[in-house]
Picture 1 (cartoon, one colour):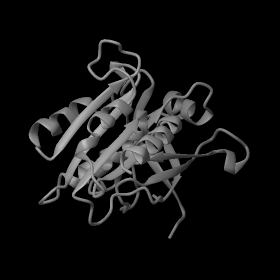
Picture 2 (cartoon, helix red, strand yellow):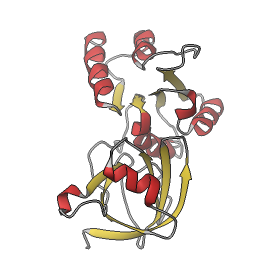
Picture 3 (cartoon, helix red, strand yellow):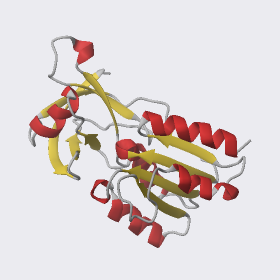
Picture 4 (cartoon, helix red, strand yellow):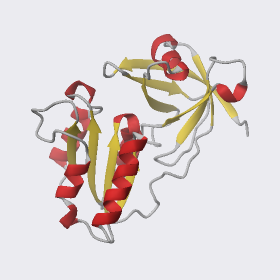
Length: 224
């Protein structure tokens, strides 16, 4: 089995001012577990290991032959600059097979809370697209944080999912919008709802490292 694959870019969309969605057509059926990522070998450096960048897969594994990436353009970032400004439809991207242990369990908990910021929402979208196909979905709470309203990723999709399914709830925190109902970071949302959590609730955290670290610290205190 080949370690590296070369996939064609079949579509790109500028989702927000800083985030680009990229769809790749895989030359062979690619199995993966919701939450996994791929390592891309980008033409940005002479040394191989300095060309590698990892991106979570944002779509359902059942969508054969296609994977979606959600990439934020980081200022000064060689990898994200290439993907967000230079990569175009018809180009080919070299990448490894999906990997990673941050995944949806085969028998998930009856209640899960997904807490994420920015493009950290990508693996949770993959998980949700898989969960929605279950006969008896677990209760899912998605708490998403970003800076401004224009930066909310997959907003329409998640709002519709919440309106059509009693097992799913969706909350957004914005740190740069004082008039937003949940102004600030994600912390005050899950802290306000802490009485609804118990030892059987499973928490998944993904996104900006400083927010993830703070979430872990606060949840550890609340759930003692």
